[in-house]
Image (cartoon, rainbow, N blue to C red; front, side):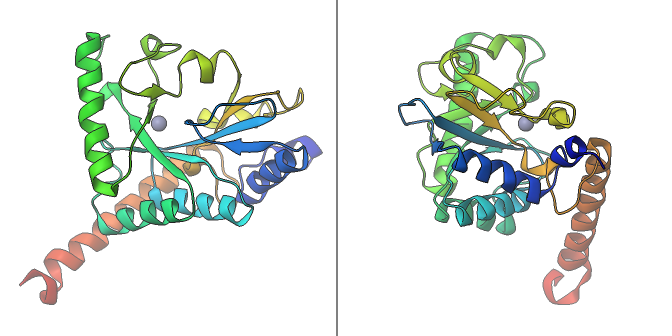
Length: 240
Ligand SMILES: [Zn+2]
């Protein structure tokens, strides 16, 4: 394996190397409510598949004194935040000192750009739900697979991770679809101010290609649903 392939592995070990590299370069990790200064890093995680995997990443960061922001979907077919195991994962992430935000999927509501009021109203509803579930103020929203019409746009009721001050005015590095695999995030040096997006679901103990991660996710969810059905409806003790 060449040095470059080694750098691009999507393992938690490599993820921690990246975090530690930023720390060794003197960078500070800040949140969306902080005023960014030179050398600051905004570290964000959009949780598309698994709060449990997000919790693992959160623990690795906390062990290194790093805090970040985890954005959760309320419209995912993969996880329900009221489900006990997921509730506990989010609570642990908060206890570790991280922030949470809303990962909002416009795709669940509209196929084309809606009125501003309609968009803000749907986001507000989901913010209220997330805020109520975890008794946390939810000030920041990250759009899931953002359509062009949310990019570089600001909203009055909330801050968006894709508004200009986080997306155009500073550097942006994302691992969407494991794009880092072909382009290391800091190949050209660490920018003065940067927002980094790392999807927890793309990282694990061992490296896999994106398609393999998707397959593993499918199998995991099938196994979870199967055992839930057994436990709730087949096992006598619970079902009767
Ligand atoms: Zn997403």
